[in-house]
Length: 174
Image (cartoon, rainbow, N blue to C red; front, side, top):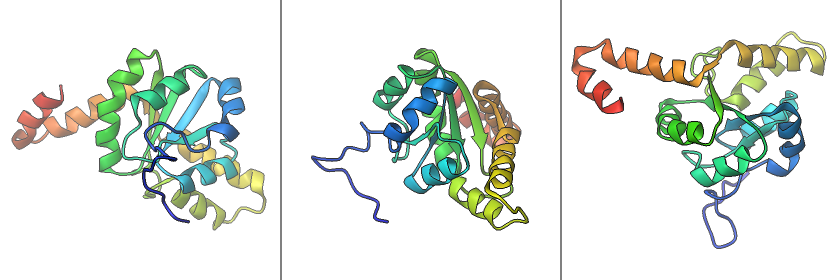
């Protein structure tokens, strides 16, 4: 697939990939999973987590979160790398101001996979014989690595603080 760039007709900062397909599930579960890209949405939907959308940029925007806030109260970010963690830290306050209960699934530690698509491929390649077993395994990994968003942020600060050379950076983050 081709990852399109911004244009007059397509604005990544204003759209949520998968929104049309996910909105009913988001409304019924009062929860949305937010991933970075198209392939991650495809993987999450194949795994039965149809309440998933992608922001398709480095960070979710205030406008995208405003759209989601009209549909649900629970926001779960799937973070795949350090850049995604930095983006999450920048938007956490905005998400909380919009009234979201925020959670984080840190895919960096989930079976060493980089993103939801990689995780789904690993589960598909496992010893499971049917789709339901694969979906259950995938969901279990996601649940296991999901924690409260504030706790996650505190853990990131504690990790920074552990090294005296990073004390200044930790104070900046606070």
